[in-house]
Every structure is written in C-alpha cells, then in structure tokens.
Amino acid sequence: MGVGFMANSRDDVGVRLQQAALGLFRERGYDQTTAAEIAARAGVTERTFFRYFPDKREVLFDGESRLEAALAASIAEAPDGLGALDMLFRAFRSVQSLLEGNRPFSGPRHEIISSTPALHERELAKIAALTDALAEALKARGVPDLQAALAARAGVAAFAHATSCWLEDPSLGLGDRIDLAYRELGELLGRG
Amino acid sequence: MGVGFMANSRDDVGVRLQQAALGLFRERGYDQTTAAEIAARAGVTERTFFRYFPDKREVLFDGESRLEAALAASIAEAPDGLGALDMLFRAFRSVQSLLEGNRPFSGPRHEIISSTPALHERELAKIAALTDALAEALKARGVPDLQAALAARAGVAAFAHATSCWLEDPSLGLGDRIDLAYRELGELLGRG
DNA sequence: GCCGCCGATGTCAGTGACTGACATGCTATA
DNA sequence: TATAGCATGTCAGTCACTGACATCGGCGGC
Image 1 (spheres, each protein chain N blue to C red):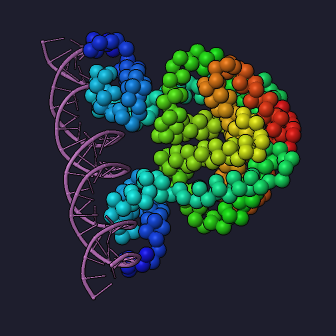
Image 2 (cartoon, helix red, strand yellow; image 1 turned 90 degrees about the vertical axis):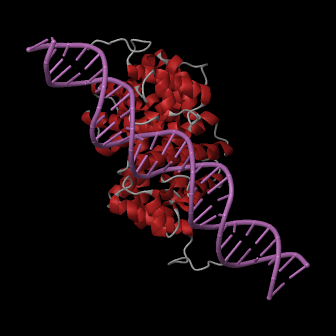
C-alpha cells in the first residue's frame, strides 16, 4: 500500500483530518466549522471525511477505545480478592501515565469539548460506554451483576471527577487527583 | 389569550407535539420519523415544531426541569448536620412518588430513549446538568466545592442506577431501588 | 510487460434537521 | 372599528450526512 504522495504529508488521512479539525475548532469554534472545511484542510473531500468518521463530532474521540481496552485489561488481570471499587481504582491508576502522556493534546481538546454542548454530549456518551464496559469486566471477575453496574457507575463518576479536576487545575498530578477522589469517596459514606 | 379553536383540540400545541412525537417514535422509530411528520400529526407546521423545541430530541425531555427543581428544593430545606450523600438521598426519596406517578409515560419513553443512541446521548446530558445543579445545591448548604461535585456525581450515579433498574424490572418499587442503591453504595466501600 | 481486480477517493444528487426573514391572520384592547 | 401584538405559516437557504456510481492507481496473475 504505497502512499502515492498525498499533498503535503505521509500521515494517514484519518490523522490529518483529526489535526485539521482540532485546529479549525480552536480557530473558529466547532459550530462555525463545516465538515467540508476540515476535509479541505486535510486535502480530501467532504465525502472522505465521513468515510473516516461517522459524524462530525466523532473526529475528536479516538483514544476512547484504547482507554477502555487498557482499563478492562487491568481489571481482567487484577489480583483476586479485591473489592469491586479497588479493582476499578487499580485500573484507573494503571492508565495514569497513558493519560498524562497526551495531556498536550487533551488539554485543548477538553477546552473545546467543554465549551461546545454537542461535543459535551458525545463525551458523556463515551463515558457511559466506558461505564458499561467496566461493569462487564467486573462481572467477568465474579462481581454480582447489580453490584458491578453500581460500582462501575460510582467508580467512573469518581474517575471522571478526578480527570476533570486534573485538566482544569494543573497544580496536582492525575495520580494525586485519583487518590484524592478515592479517599473523598470513602469519607462520603464514613460521615453520613 | 383565548384559544381560538385549534384544529382538533384545546390542548397546548407543545403538549400535542409531545404526544404526536411519542406516538410516531413508537410506531416507526425515532430515525424514521421526521420533524415535519410530528408537526403534521399535531396539526402545525414543521417551523412551529422548532419554535416549541430547539431540536427534535428535546421533545422527549421536559419533566427534567421540574425534577431538578424538586431535588434542589429538597436539598435546600434539608435539616442541618446531614452529610452530603444523605442530603442527596433524602432528596431522591422525596421525588419518588413524583416519578412513580408518571411511570405510564416514562415507561415507553425510556424504551425509545434506550434504543436510540441520539436520544440516549441527550438523556446523559440531562443527567449531567442535574448533577451540576445538585452540586450547586450542596455548595449552598456549605459542602466544600470539590466534595460537593464528587458527592453529586456519585449520588446521581446511584440514583440513575436505581431508576434504571426500576424501569426495567418492575418487581421492586422505586423507593426500594433507591434504598438498595444507598445500601450497596455503602457496602462498596465497607469491603474493599 | 499487460490485464483485470480492488480499495481509496472523487463526484453527484438527495434527504432531513434546523434557521432567519418576512407575510398573515386572529385576539385583545382602546 | 382600528390597531398593536403574538402565534403561526411560508419560503429560501445552510449544513450534516448518505447512497450510487465513476475514476484512478497499485498489485497479483498470467
């Protein structure tokens, strides 16, 4: 599969589309950017854009499947005898460096997403999908169905809280934010 | 502001649109229903549909603001000295009857929503908005910011879990589901 | 080295969600 | 009865997305 000299880059078309999209969204905002413009900047046609991404929003969501896989794998190989929440947080901590690695990308991305309702919705959907996947992973480790579903919901909620805090206030590392969330989650019920 | 004899009903146009939409969605599915068809069944124009609802999805989401208000009010008037999670669950239980009241409506609604990705996304957005509102309500009661945000996320996650279970398995009432979720949330941290 | 296959892309036409601008008709009130 | 005002209709336009078909370039078989 030779590359045949695409206009200006040997990058994969998909990657070029993502970069073009991120750039345009930052320059003009999501709503003011058309799919045709993104495609043009990437040197392809609008139709090609939609062959790579099922819709305009999806161009900003790609690492999600990798993250999901990593978390599920961590739960699958967790030591026996751990509680559901501990399996989850073990998994969250295991992807810490993965997330910290592409902070320079997820920073601007987060900015655009949180200021664009349509993108925010899509992110929530991704988080929900992640929740379901982790619930399944917990069930596979023998956690009863309902408990797995609830633990996944609560755990992912805490994880989302931690990453959100981390992205908006860089004074603490992601690892610290995760630990903090875990601890505060515990205190939440200790008090009552 | 007399009602001037709309085609076939003295119902408010908005209500007629909602009923028409729910009916058509159940008959043909969400994607196979156009906004123009909904409007036609309600006896108005497509343009009028979009004057009542900002987009096609929104026609199924209306009680949300009432629910949010009721929950926030419950937190605002909770007795002092309660922990954040207890304030939340007190609020959840306070809207139990409100929700059980329109189960005949929310049943079919839930069916369509959970089988339509676009609608599911919108529901998640509503839940997120609810989460933010409850976090604010907790802050107003003196809960520290970060803790309020985390408690709201975890609490709403448990509440969503409870209502979801309740809608899909009628063998338990909503109140029981809420109590169950509260108890299991406690066990989640007791174990680990 | 030529040929035919195939995958990636371009092209075109169409549907449907949404929007802004303007026209119209009915209600209420002077 | 005149008229201001609001709800609705009408019209034209943009843009996300899709299916069908054309094209082009590399690659394996011969």
